[in-house]
Amino acid sequence: MIRYWFPLGVLALWAVAAITGGWVVDSANQIDLQRILMRPGDLGLMGYDDLGRPILQRIWVGAQVSLLVSFGVVSLSLLIGTAVGLCAGYQGGWLDLILVRIMDVFLAFPGILLAIALAGVMGPGVDNLIIALSAVGWVGFARLTRGQVLSLKQRDHVTAAVALGTPRHLILLRHLLPLLSAPLIVEATFGMAGMVIAEAGLSFLGLGIQPPDASWGSLIRDGASYMLMAPHMVLAPGVAIMLVVLSLNMLGDRLRDRLDHRSHS
Amino acid sequence: MGRFLLSRVVTALGSMLGVACLVFLLIHLVPGDPVDVMLGESARPADRQALRVSLGLDQPIETQLVNYFSGLAQFDLGQSLHSKRPVSELLAERIPATLELAIAALFVALLIAVPLGILAAVERGKAWDWGAMGFSMLGVSIPNFWLGPMLILCFSLWLGLTPVSGRGGFSNLILPAVTLGTGFAAILARMVRSSLLEVLGEDFVRTARAKGVAELQVIWRHAMRNAWLPVITLLGLQLGALLGGAVVTEVVFDWPGIGSLMIESIQKRDYPVVQGCVLFISLMYVLVNTLTDLVYGLVDPRIRLDGSI
Image 1 (cartoon, rainbow over the protein chains, first blue to last red):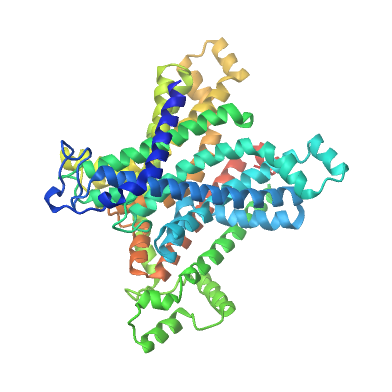
Image 2 (cartoon, rainbow over the protein chains, first blue to last red; image 1 turned 60 degrees about the vertical axis):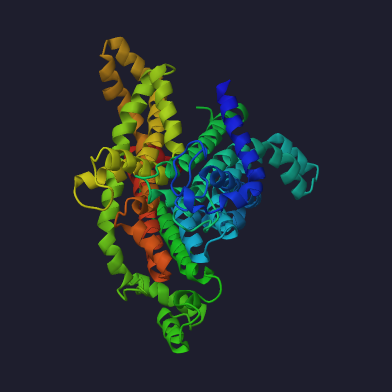
């Protein structure tokens, strides 16, 4: 039971924090020189940072960035990847050949590296972050969709639909997409986990969210310089990332067992 | 065999060509005028023009592409805007550090993952299995840029056992290698477990047990030998990914490798060097993946015969 409730609980908390994040922005960026590097205690639940800003509120606001970016990237990647995969797999022929070549080129970059380069070149900001990560993220969905479509289009119900003269877009949307949804949902859940880490990683490198706004990655980056005096600055945001990613991975595992009978191990 | 080899090499060359094209396009993704971004708004027109000419940005894009590839053929990756040194020279200086870190991380990962994966498979469903899979789940969920600082805090700052950062002796290597290797160990342990579990169900394992071969021998000599193949493939695939993941770890530990060169160059807007770093790491990645494919085909005849992986 805990394998369900733990991830769902953490993710619900994440979502609530993200939605309500806007309310605490002001206090999250409030500099208070009296409270510089103050440890967690009676005043602030998680202590204060090097400018006397409350860590709890900054993590709260950071939840918004991490949810927004990871959800945005996965949605965009899912949309592009599924469309490309459907076209390549169903159409076949030269279109498939070209699309597969393009996928191969994107797969030839080690994941995060291309995102770092793109974010570095395009400049910081949430929108550039989403574009850079989506440029890396769509390939996985495209490959998965293509592979599934290649085997699904041999099925009898698709042959029957073709024989009945069903328009192609209806075959794709009504007869293929529903069967694809289970593996895609599983992939998307793991994809979210990867993107939470990727967003935080880019922000850690200074390529994502810019100061004074808070992201879990930039909180760790700020805290790394004060580790001996104020370990709480690094500890708290790291735990937040870990809990969310762990929950998404656990949920992905559970979903795979429930939905996706293809990859039972 | 010849066809298998040829098809793999051709695919690899195609990917490399595509990678080089994408890397070439990178500089054109700079918003606005790349020369403005590199020099700042206040630069003199003469300086701008000089930079534009030296980067070849004044020429039509086809000419730029041709020049870029003819440069690549001669290992000429352009010049750093900052130090005015050739990019290939800067890369060459940093390559040993990155390789050292990647190989050490691979070693750490194997050291953790192989015993853990075997234990989990042998003790399937019991405490060890749960523990190992719990570690694996945690391992993929902890980001490098957090694990690194935490290790520094514990082992360098509190216990004083290892240096905080930089490259030097063996003690400098431990923390970065563990940081980079842990996530990899988590994935690898799962692979070892599932691969071994599959083999343990085979007839020859039952026969060996029936003959009275000691259990340890059955696992190591009979089963593990056959379980290595998928593990080796994953190793190859991940060695390239390690090179990519090394970027963050290098920054955390101030490790003078290609990853930190890339981040430094991004901060200085030294785009030719950024392009060089991305190109080098990606080409290494393609190369390692292709070699893994070839080795796998050599070791397991089933693959090269039907020609599909």
